[in-house]
Amino acid sequence: MMGHSLNKPTPAEEAEAETRHQFAVRANSILAFIECDEEQRPKLRAAIIEAMLWAQAQPKLTQ
Image (cartoon, rainbow, N blue to C red; front, side, top):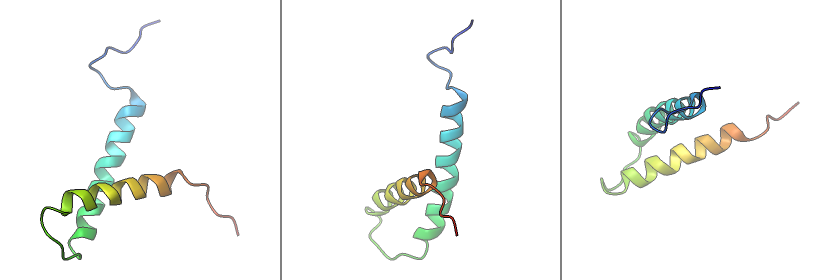
């Protein structure tokens, strides 16, 4: 059985990186509506991405 090399990401890591990228794009759209210092934007972007990842991992509500 072949293992993954240390330099090549696993499919799960690639999927997470793609999800983070998609959320970063969404975060940039959200930040377009927020007035704040430019130095705060990277922190806000990171917080928005983490919030989206957290929300995605939560159980779905049933009605």
